[in-house]
Length: 320
Image (tube, rainbow, N blue to C red):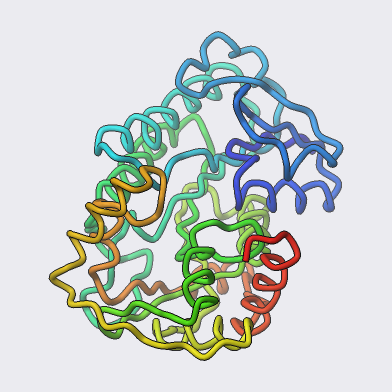
């Protein structure tokens, strides 16, 4: 089978590419000339050099694929319009080309986010029946991209995956938390609840959804089915690093100020004005029952071992 992957050079995308190759797929990665190929250059891959924003000039190169896995997008931006320009605009451009050039496509799999639904406000994990109420520009842009995909449903068989927070080797978002705890501190603004998923489990779920015929036209949440607290996650990271965790209390009212300062320091960092909105909500949990019931998705990685593998990778690659 021939698979096309956008966002292949990123954290999740590079793991997905490896998993597809292990299953015997012929994989083509959509990359830009400026993309770093550090996680891909040792693999037997084909490359399609294109900017999804101006994809029309390379339209013919998108023919003949059985699966398209769309992971390209941005999670951090300094302007709200940038989220929509990339996360929705580039998705629309890709769909236009796929509809015109690849009518025999078996499945278009879009990796969205729990942020497209928003936090739980009913005290229990959200599921596919939950009315989406995204609270950040990032979440709204991902929901808009989903709506764009639905509009192409009559010509493109699609499946949408909404993962929660994803961690594992090569991730730079959780790295910040690992680095703080490595220094012995953990900032906290009150008890929060999270669903998590180790990256290897996520990519296996993505592939399983693509291969499940009845998943066409559906949306799925994937998680490891356990609700974690921020304190519990911090303690596991501390244990993996051999560090005692000192909790630093931060008033919730200061979060917008922290987001503003973080964005000034690093425009591409996870601490910015938009993402701090997500952090200010206390319940980011989702229910994977539908995926488990319909195509047998099951997370295999417990938090303790996944955190340990991640910490070991960070240290081996001198990220810590």
